[in-house]
Image (cartoon, rainbow, N blue to C red; front, side):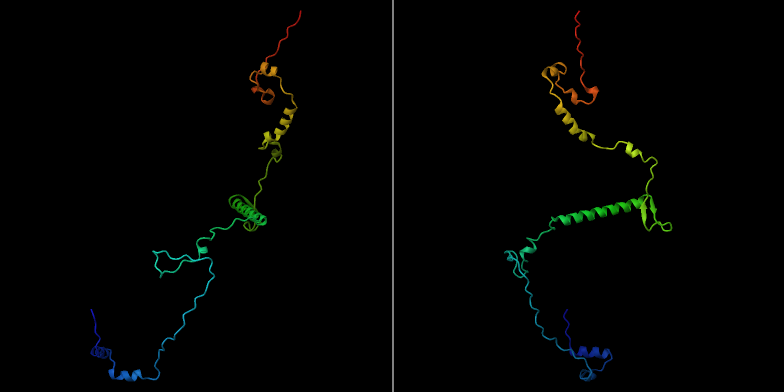
Length: 205
């Protein structure tokens, strides 16, 4: 719907608002009126030339020219996505030491919160908690009880040296006493060794 503004319609609206239409020229020519200056012409900001690395890729045929160009190739082709691993000995040792210290602190705090604790101060037990030491009624039992050690690996060089000093068994002994050819000296358990038949010698009358 088109609306055509006529002079009569404007006069009627001014009269409805209670204003005098003949006072409009004097209101427009008043001395203390606010004048809006036209905006000054400003120069466009200069384009800052950035350091370009490599040749930019041109638009393919299906991309129109009014779209922005491709960025430099180093921004999406040659940029590493992860840090290079540390290879310096000092940095590796410092990182390992800090991780070990953090693990020890976290474990100490966890044990202090979940287990029994002792405090250096009688009045305030939460200032500096210490892990409670469990008293042992018989402290000498740790020295007497066997520990989980690999005794076979410790005794291995001694047994190999003893085997080298032993003489090689003869063929008659392997066939006669031990028909399967098993070295009976290498078996430590006497219950697993093969049975030896005693040789009876005939007495001469």
